Structures are given as C-alpha cells and as structure tokens.
Image (cartoon, rainbow, N blue to C red):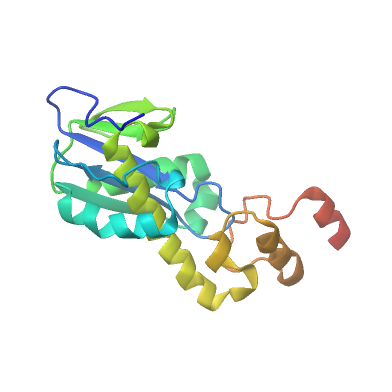
Length: 201
C-alpha cells in the first residue's frame, strides 16, 4: 500500500510519531513534520520497516525538504513522574511547538492523544504506514533517539545500547541483572522479569 499525501483536502497537516515508548532507559522522543504536498521518496515508509541505513539516508533529506519539523524529548525522570503514555503525548506537544508553521491538523500515529491547543487532531492506528507526514516523523524520531542511545552506550557499555537502543532485549536485561540499573533507566518500568528478580533476592 502506497503512503497517502494527506488526510484532509486543504488543511496544513503535521504528522506526529514517537520512538522509544517501549524502552527501559532514557527518553521518549517525538517528531512533528509538515511536508510539501508533492514530497515523495522511494524509501519513505514506516520507520520500523526500513533498515537503519535507509533511515539515516532519509533523515537529513526530510529535514531539508520539510516545510517545518520539530523534535520533542521527555527524559526518564519525567517519564517516571507522569507515566510513559503521558510522556509520549508531551513529547509530541513539544515537537509541535517547534514548528515554524502552525498546523491546522495533527495526524497522530496511534489511537489516543491529549489535544493540542489551537490544532485539531486525528488519531490513526498504524498511521506511519499510511501517511507520508507520519512516516517522515517516525524516521526523524527513530534516528534522533537511536543516536542518543549510541552516545549513552559510550558511558554505559554494559547494557549494549549500541545494539538494542534501550529496548528490553536479552543482552540489555543481562546487563541490568549483572550491574544493576544505570542512572538513566526508567525506574517505573519492570526492568527485569519477576523470575530474575526472585533470583536476586
């Protein structure tokens, strides 16, 4: 299925998506992107269906060609305070606030959102595989956050964030089990499965 250019006929639309919601450490990152109506690129797709090299190739091109783009970050401490769902919405709000063009309609990847004052919104399940602006936002958010985690890996190599980017993989959880959580882990998350926690008690 090819990606659609827009949801509405003549409104200024910004696609919004986040990355890192299911991770165990550091921030959730969101992006908002307003694309020109005629934007097209053969690689553009849901970022999860693209290779890392494809995402990196598109990243600067999207920023160059977009009419406006913004990136919002909510760190692990704030996630622990307001929960990951609200943190995801807040990251999107922060991304939208950075747009130099005011959007009339926000296209949100997912089924829930906290309204953004001054802009209507549409929640679209799997929207990053349906609309170009959401797909572009998914690429910006994913690449930006992955680079964040690559930097974090230099300080905390025991968790293999250069490979897992903070997601709860076997090697990541092995690092937590062996070394304990880092200062940038999300302490409101279940860092280890119950059976591993029992072994440590």
